[in-house]
Length: 242
Image (cartoon, rainbow, N blue to C red):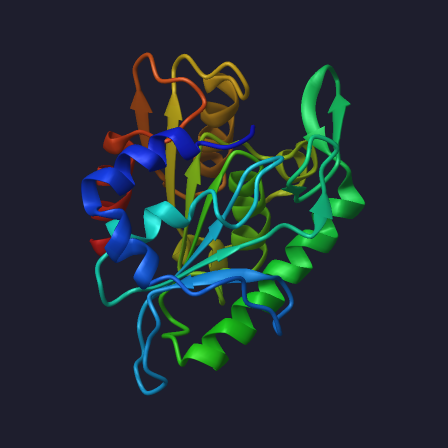
């Protein structure tokens, strides 16, 4: 579930690496999670906020290339997971197997969820973002954390973009119908050839949400592996802007 940087390098070459580099400040701290922001915004603007959550073994740099694909008036923050990964980079939780399937240590998931939600409050306050338009967009492990944080705090999170992700075993078994959850917007993107998190995992999360009265927008990408394609981003941006 490591870097999708090769795809982003292509995006950057199309958009212009010089312009991108000039508009992205370095690693920032002072909030609950370290992060990078794009673009710098004035403190008197109430812009939609998109928080990017990277996958296993990666860092805040990996998804930062997505920033320039969003509307120019959006505040984009790409955050770093709190735990170091064995392969280098960072992770939101240590991996473990539950009934033969990929999952994460519950205590790590809980801690990362707490940090993400705290970061949301801090970032909205610091950048004067619109608290009613906060989106979490995660890839792989980051997508799993989008489910965790978004479904636990639909009052703080307007919507979640789940890219090649799944629900953890704990969330899949515990999530239940709640009228507050009906306000949460959910975008799911998953490839039929995903070799890391099978398509069936993405579909299981979709079915579970439908079962409790939440209707996600699910996009299936034929032949796509564990990555983020141009088509995924086109669909995601259209969904957020809707």
